[in-house]
Image (cartoon, rainbow over all chains, first blue to last red; front, side, top):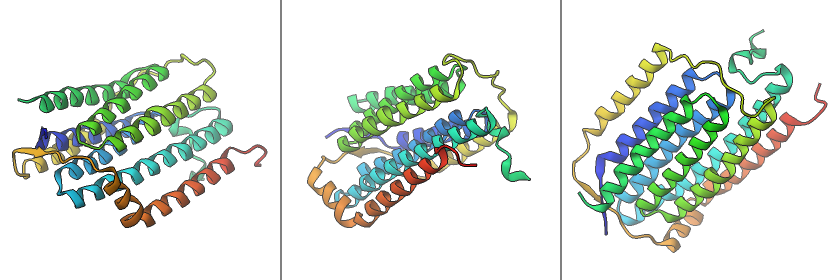
Length: 105
Length: 162
């Protein structure tokens, strides 16, 4: 049985979420926005896996089960996001998020 | 400081560094390289947390499928594959917002009890029971969402939509 630093995982998760939000707010390229979203999503999943190791046995497996479902949701989100990227590229010839303003009119 | 703590500190440093590098480098293909290192690093953290099934899933889904999908997205939307991004301006407002979020989360960490966490052993049969029995409806919902996502993606990229 190994021991691990307790608050370190939550610190790491918070830092990764901060990096993800920062990328989400500053990047203009749609693919980079998707990558920032994935970093933030991974920070969330890390939290679930961490608390799964922290909790008693039966409850801990709930955290791992939810993490499996979340990984699936994140993969679907990337697939739909890339379909939107391709559609935007065909329509506008660019994948700059500031150019996607069709719903403004 | 034991071996687990040392491994965690190294993996955590690599995770934050590669996540930042992925968002700050100027060539999109280099971004993909950094983000694949990030995904493999998180997979190692899952192994450290006694969740080998999730570690393998992370390797397959993220380091495998998502990375290739993003690379494919870059390939079809760019004229030249090694094209540079415009100079990345670090706006003070997004930086401040992210910093406030991190400070808020880190201050909440201080409220938790100190000490080290015992990592329990791994039991694959109990995990499968939890996944397919207790959380079976969620898994079913995930399947439906994936089906809807794939159908929506095909609808978005099909030819002759005008």
